[in-house]
Image 1: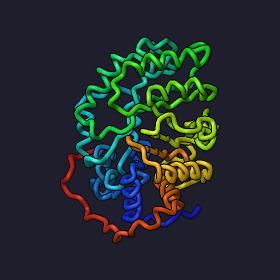
Image 2: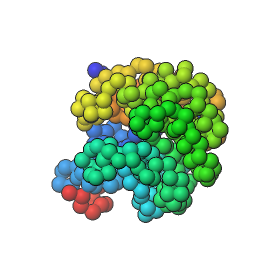
Image 3: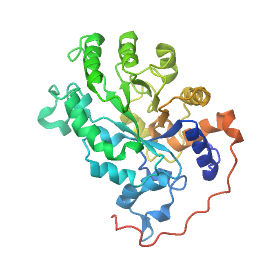
Image 4: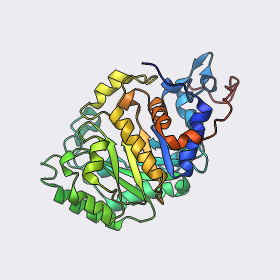
Length: 341
């Protein structure tokens, strides 16, 4: 499969043009060495002629932010981070960069999965599910120091079973209580992964609290293009969030095995590309106060950068963006970082 030409300077210019309109396009995480030679420069991370893994993972965010204005930090799902972690991340990006942040599973998991990593908690109900005081204290308060760099806060609710909630109304009732006590000064969004619940009761709750529905391409969910028809107008015009993660029907593990190490496009998902294009073109002429955030995962087609490029090439309004001079690769870095071996 032939890839389109990757003109990094022009790629950056079009990403910046979108951000000026409040449309922030980025990727789901950023620590992928498969992107070296596209947005990453190997010499920044080399030690004795090889890319040092730790050096790359600890420092590539700053180079990522030379191209994109947003990124979804999936790592936030697994633990509560303190202010030091957030400040270290913010120190690598400019003031106009926005992080999309997943809320820790300690808040969004109703019952812990029976997996080895959960130990004795596996299979047990989570006592802190939708614990608003805990969320405010452990998640929001540490973020205060980097508030200007915080974009959408994403509550990802994995698929619920009847043993956890017999029907959507019980979930919506808990969600109502939770959002009613949260501070209104942050941008909240919900990523639902229970297909049959994507309907009026859920959407009415989001509208009441001005919370965005996350358009999500995921294994057990309708494609984003189908969700457009189910949801209709977004629950709030102030914020729109989308995460193009997987081809519906495909398991995460299968996508990893198929596409890793994420260097090239291996499968075109034209339906997802069309939905991406539609979102961007609609928001180009209909601005939202808090912005539109669109995140693309490598596991959608094989390489998120190339997925973005393919969509940018489709958008007529971006063809008038001036083409900057090509970027000259920097000279090999020497002594810039501690050893990361």
